[in-house]
Image 1 (tube, rainbow, N blue to C red):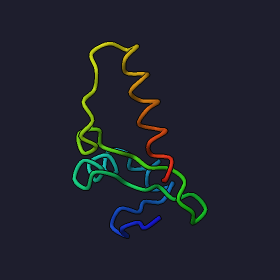
Image 2 (image 1 turned 30 degrees about the vertical axis):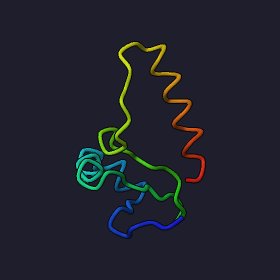
Image 3 (image 1 turned 90 degrees about the horizontal axis):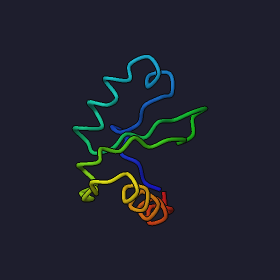
Image 4 (image 1 turned 135 degrees about the vertical axis):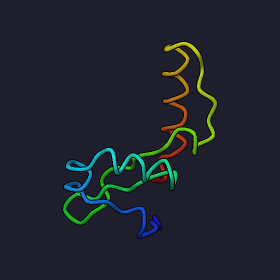
Length: 74
């Protein structure tokens, strides 16, 4: 997996400055959070994913499962 170095944030940074990390995800589309010098989590901006979200919670669960299975390559 190729990661832009500008999108890397440590777990400590994410924990202490979560609002800053969220703003970065809004600007860049996503942020990769490293734990013990390894990529562990990805914070995605839903708008950047360009996935239309359904109105009801039941449909949202189906869409989420589909998108998670589609993104298994991460």
